[in-house]
Amino acid sequence: MKLLKDRLFIKGLIYDAVGMATMAIPLVGPFLDLLWAPFAARKMGEMYPGKKGKVASVLVFLEEILPGTDIIPTFTLMYFYTFVWGKNKQGDNRVIDVEIIE
Image (cartoon, rainbow, N blue to C red; front, side, top):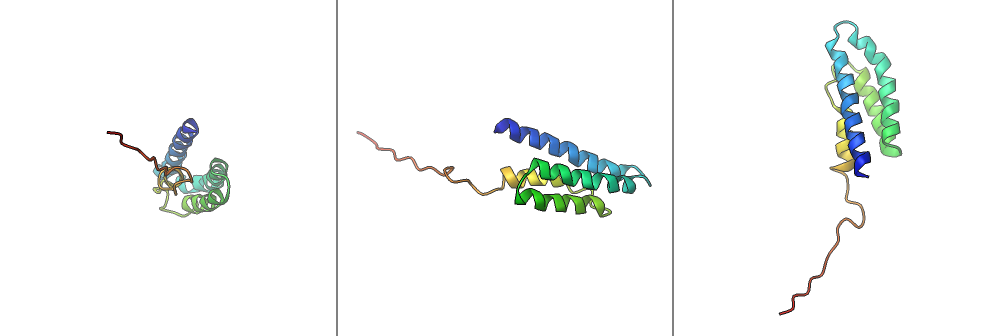
């Protein structure tokens, strides 16, 4: 599971970097976003299946298509939302009873 999480993080960083790089290309960059937005949305859906992935796909599409929003690291934020800030799964909070014998 850790390897999968690491790969998702690295892929997310790369996709965010590509999305931000289009801002650096004058005049052509906004037109590249027209191609990049649907691709990024599809990749987001593949990386995070289910309802969260669908919502994130729409958000990354809008973020890439709207001018001036390329600076937002959507893939990285989704990774943190899923694996760092997400709710604890059942079984993560275990209580261990310790008996002290004197």
